[in-house]
Length: 117
Image 1 (cartoon, rainbow, N blue to C red):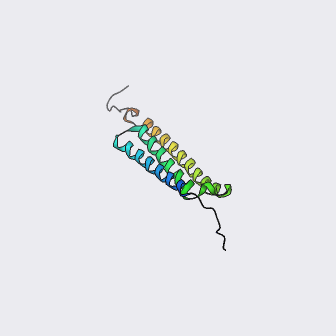
Image 2: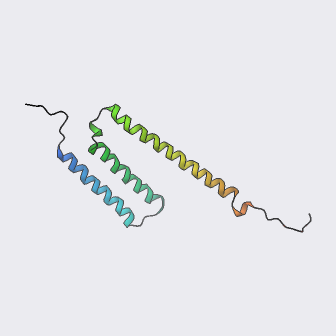
Image 3: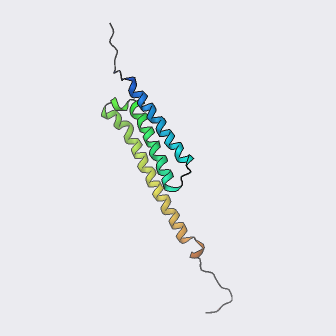
């Protein structure tokens, strides 16, 4: 008899995660359906997105059952990208604040021609 390499995971785990992905997707659509706006909208959308991607990576890509080195090799670069994106957002906000401060119409002093001081 030949022995099968690897592990066999119960199919119920996949069905539970599949159901959770539907629930998270429904929550994401509910945010849009309820017409939430502003920071709450984007926070909820990002939370649902990270939850869905986390479950997909953990269960369907079998990261839960991998060695720590493999998990680190995949998750550390993604974490670095998130840090760089956060830094770019902060820099973009700083640039916008600087432009609003120094290039707004209130920052310009009108020049009066023909007036002697």
